[in-house]
Image 1: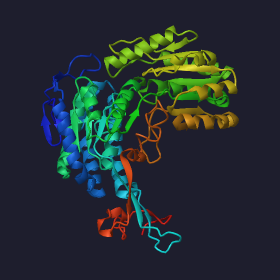
Image 2 (image 1 turned 135 degrees about the horizontal axis):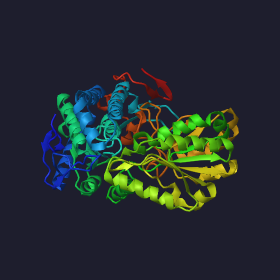
Image 3 (image 1 turned 90 degrees about the vertical axis):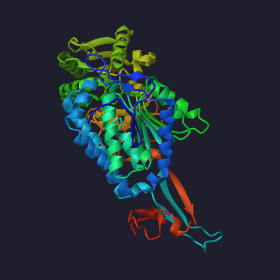
Image 4 (image 1 turned 90 degrees about the horizontal axis):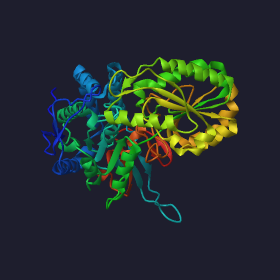
Length: 526
């Protein structure tokens, strides 16, 4: 499959007339061929009109038809083979084994939503049968199911060019919900985006999907993204990126005559609590695990462990010494883009200059352009509480240790944190009291609580939550990973006294889908 620098609009591939845009080689910053044509306002409108026209036909397809479509996309990603891996590696600098793992994660996300569709429970079918003789008033026949919101705009992420981009979780969950998708490709991996977009386009054609079920646009600046979010035919937005970018989209969505939801994953420092009994029992192994988690993917993960917290102790100093030794041996890795590398270096500089913050250790000196040198800093709780800037995410392989005087001090810092994607506790039996006291606060602060692990790595499953209170996300009620990610793009509809012949299959008296339903308060499969 060739990369031609084209925009995908339904079943057409066109060269955008909005000016030339180039992807960059991550290791050198050089422009990669071919040049891409940026999309125009006319392209945005064409994609949105096609998506709107396809919405009703697409959402009325059977669960099996949509599941087959998702599986065809998954197979297409596998069939790209080395062509995909080589291009992603060139554009992102990420190691090829990591990218192969990410490809399989993307494939498995698509298969998960296919399975979810076939299960049928996603409909959320509820039936309250008529009670004509009820006193003092009768009850009408009431039935509820969920339907898709409408066309969804998805913004590709920089740090996961497959799993959070063109065919990633936002796209998969929206398509599963019956919503056409328009992707705004991330400028850091334009070639990758075109390859994946052509896979989706072919899968749609091969499985007989409506023409406008998928499009992909290319932006030269921010105009296409803003136009998408502001377009009256777009019903929701999925975004993974910076707080600044996410809030700009939220503002644009709320400024519309008809506001729409923006599900934005934005900023998280993912605190890790090193409880005293755990440090005493296995502090050295925890330290080595922390360093491996910190430098994974050059620290460019939404769940990178950016903050550590611990009580003063000799065990803590052993942890610090072990982590420092392990970090000093780590080789810098290339970051995704020159801009991300520049922002990381600025963040490091701010930490170096911050009063009351000291450098514990650094990795080896960078040997190439745009490489991130890992760094580990420490401070005390009073300094952290007095300087709000220390809670800012520094996207990359740096972390800050906060040393607390006692458990009350630890609780105070925990209560001060903003919303997070994850919080981790390293715990042993002797830490029961501290952990129990922390849990109510941590439940309020995060979407996922881990014990005796590190947050890098997000399982694709039915129970996973990848979300959290602001600023981790713009909507703490949702997740962008896992089966319940579909909920973001659905809304409930109640059918009152509707003739059986006009009811959707999930609500018909005979239950032709043979799915689980809540009937008069009882969960049955009748």
